[in-house]
Image (tube, rainbow, N blue to C red; front, side, top):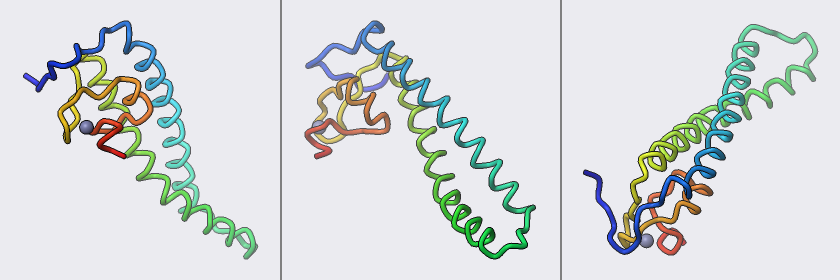
Length: 120
Ligand SMILES: [Zn+2]
């Protein structure tokens, strides 16, 4: 059994549903972005530009893409976990003070393991 906090009851499904919906939308958006990034990487490996200016732009794009890829994958993973946590309806305790992290905060920072006060 996951650890529960007694001070506040766990969020009811009615409270978390809009948050879950929003996170699902976010997840879809990020998945689409990931697909685009991966497509760009595949193209970048195949195409060679004759024009040095084009090539310079491509290199710059590749660097941005390289930074975006792990970031996007990370975000997707965090949001997936947040959805699972919210759907299970279990209260999530702050790892520092043990108080329940409000679902509103989870909606903003799904990957958080601390309440706003401890994260500050
Ligand atoms: Zn805390």
